[in-house]
View (cartoon, rainbow, N blue to C red):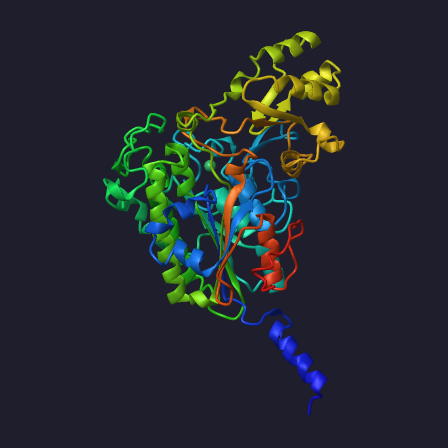
Length: 567
Ligand SMILES: [Zn+2]
């Protein structure tokens, strides 16, 4: 017979963890599946703006049944896609996880690089790469090869730690329209799939697979994207139901050939050059992502045994639609309502397949969104588009060049938000890069639209004021990848040139509209709760690690969210 102490001890251990015969442990009643949803460019206020028209199963399931953090922020300065995804995945700041921007200048290679490009791991199969003639996503065009891997991600992810803790028995997958929306979430140990506009299907690289699983080939052969040929993106409801119903034809919306700026938006024929691109600029991109993710769940038997599996789904349509039409447009409003429908379809499917009560849902976003400057102007708020190519032509730069007798370009590159100085000139002229970058930064702040120009040397030497904004810039600074000067534009200002395509709106600033995102955890056993305390996206990976009582990712910072952990 056990002693009372033994019995108490054993029952409390039993509550904490089921220890498996092979030595793995996982919390009692651990969810069978984690579904981490990231909505690209979902500013924190956006779901609430459509909640009154949402059905019970999507956003409202999360907002009414989950722990909802209403004041969650990214705490880094460069609020771009890969930066936000990597932060959610690793719980680390970009300074540590290394994804400081969608694009940075590689000082060893002497060229700009795309965050997850890796020529050692080419795409599986032929013809799935980036078609540079028709690609509208400017960062994708930077990559020199179609190879992709998570090698540039410098710290582990929650998904990596889950894999380590179960000795590889957890199944880990990530899906997105964007490669950079999938790869960071799958970590180094999981498998990622993303949408190829050239192929109209989902692809992966040789980092993950030597050949496609049969089910992926079969899914791609169904040619679901072709089914949109000749169809339109139509409004879900009557125009009178929308806040922006009479706001469809605004001059700042991006005019893409054939797609138009008013409903209905035709996708054109399957043969037309921009056909698959237009799918991604509409709710169709999310529909395809969801369809593929559902097939993955079935074929890979996610959540079917006692070892917790992980699936990341990053929905990209909200971002592309926001860029093209603006976050406050009829298109964005309809897209959000369509996203709500996708979420309710996803949750219903999970319920049937795994059980929603056995699934932990985590939803957040990689960044928020800036309003269209012309729209802000109509409300009396100052905002403009900023042209970075005009930096070299600015009088302040001309003055510096005259002072040092520099005939060639002083700025070798502007990879948002970093200015990279021309190192060859600096070496040749024996300039003092530290002093000069400070002098150049001081001059740059005189340019209209530039709020701050922060020389990296000030970060290295700890010579920055202890303010929110400077801390954000510091957390973005990786000595090997960051540039010489960090440029912050005034609130509402941004660069709208997407490699020749002028877009309506973007993100990437350290201002509140870009850092503000939702964080929601929903699962059986979690309280329905709204929390207004400020929390940070770095808290997500750490909270997940504590929830499952496993090791935290190698660069994880932040604090565990006590409401999720039942404290
Ligand atoms: Zn974007």
